[in-house]
Amino acid sequence: MAARPRPGMRWLLFGVSGRVSRRTYAWAMLFWMVVMAIPLSAAIRAVPDSDAMAAAGLGIILLFFPAAWSIAVMSIKRLHDAGLPGILVGVLVIPAASFLMLIMIMVWPSNKGPNRHGPGPDQSGY
Image (cartoon, rainbow, N blue to C red; front, side, top):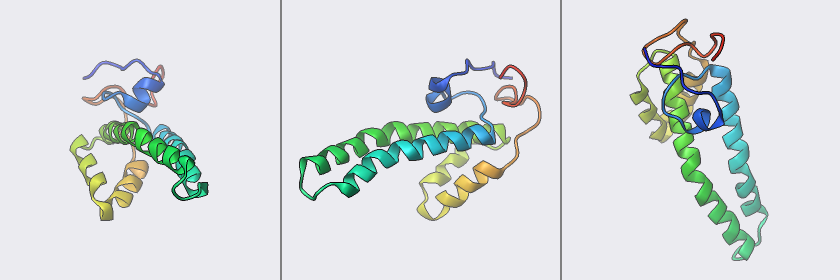
């Protein structure tokens, strides 16, 4: 069994080990949707071919890579919590199946107790 990871926002959003509960996963996904909405809404409000449009585009590009990494590792941790192989995260890059995969990740129940990826996230002290 894997050791318990040190909890924190850096581990939650960017760490590759451990398990994440459904509720924590949903809150983290909401966080990234809000963060990505900021430059997107700036791009929508900006005048075409303006400095504001260029700045919003740069913001989208700079936020995309950490957000994509974070969503991938959180999804892997959520799959591990559900007792499923992390390789299933590859389905998230298939446009037709990604939305259904995200819904499945959010509703699939957690394994009770510890598994080979660590103790359950709902256990005390996690």
